[in-house]
Image (cartoon, rainbow, N blue to C red; front, side, top):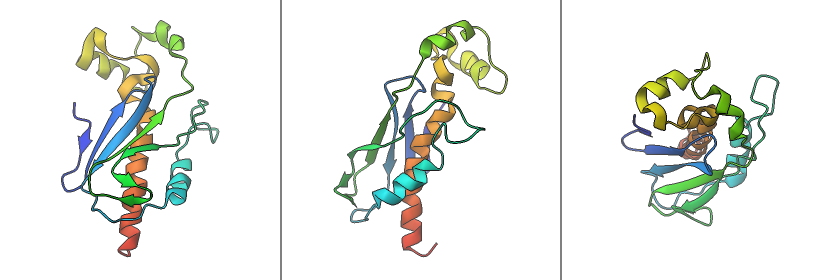
Length: 150
């Protein structure tokens, strides 16, 4: 299963719901582009967990830490890498579900693909938690599109 998407702008996501962190690399963003981090934070808040009655009760800050590709608030042309640390995990809650796939989740698919070696805690790499790194990338690319009037 690939965790990379795109051609001209390539997004790769990594991590699992209950690993130390989740994150992304974003390639193809030109050097010299300003990232408005306050705007990115507001964009990220739209998908943050625990904010409404229909989302997970898990509360996470979802504050990305940029590791590379940005100097200050300006892109430098190299891959942008960002990570969000997972701080509110209760992996032991999933021990009882190790061999019982949950309806509406990718537990069975993960078992078929990865067998006994899958990370079943919190849905692992198939968790909705992995939408957070996608939103980091989306928030950045959206700013570039706005700059072009799109």
